[in-house]
Image (cartoon, rainbow, N blue to C red; front, side, top):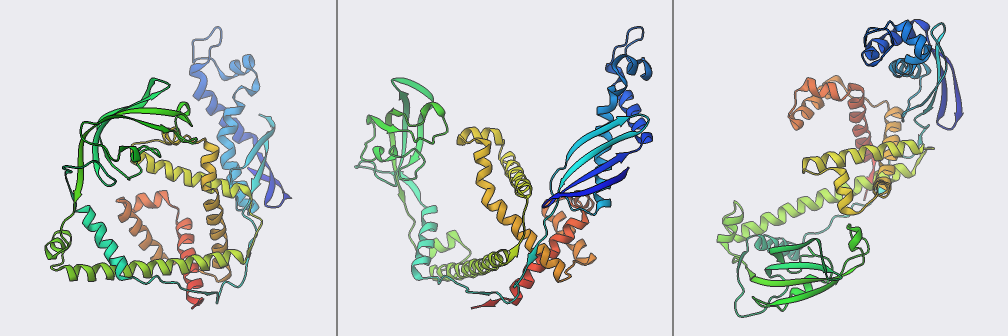
Length: 426
């Protein structure tokens, strides 16, 4: 491989002219021939036994060129990019030019590169730390939530259903008098006011008694995932089987023992306050860091190619898809349930992706300006930490995450620490 020429054709865009020698092309063509000959018929020869020259005579000299080029160009492109000293941030557009067994082949690669970045005034940034004070009411609300979790359901005797009750009921949905898919269930359990059903449904279950049979009239939202039901008025025929209310445990020392390792209610309250104050401190510290990062971005200048944003969105969607798979769902099914097209789904990640790209570029520039680096000891410690987190062997982690990438991640974290340590926090 040889890099013939490199030209900057626009901001953050380069065009590389690359040549691959005839000897390399010949070897790749021969490999393509051996790989595909078993599928090729040539009159006068048993299948898979025709000589390459006969195949090329029958189908043309360039019959195996496409496979050969696909075999060769990734390595040739990578070597050319390294020789050109470019930091490419998106897959290159590749176009083959002249191809012949005598001369080899030439191709042109259009590359998008990391932008030039400048960042200033990243030290001594002034920000205000706003910590929320934990009040008695906050503690009481947290205690109430714990009390709610410990509640048990008992029959609501002598009264009709009300918000907060749990109903067991049947429902059967009809659109224009015809039952629709997914609109029927028997002995379904629902807490009134939980917002589990479409707007207007749960309110019509209030004031009902056991054995009541009645119709619920609702209209599906315009953005509902099922196309045939969007904005349509429907009727659900319902029958109530059970009405249960919450019976809350007493807030006393026994309750404290049941829900925690504390012996008294006062000790539990003190523990709740302490943990809430820790959470408030962490939230305030995170807010300070976010303000500092926002200021660093504000003080950065760069013409960022759209391809970097798109690549980050791709990464975020890939991570989202992996999480769905761990829950037994795939992305295609998720989009069907939510009624979203892929383009609109991608847009939900756009703002976050842009900010992440800007943060990374700014911090990498600070790493460069401050000559920040990670030591081999820090690198090995991080590999060990990742191996423990993912329950993998260290060597397996190393095969997945290149040392250069992990070192930069560690250096970027140090850049964040530098910005924080030099900040003026009021």
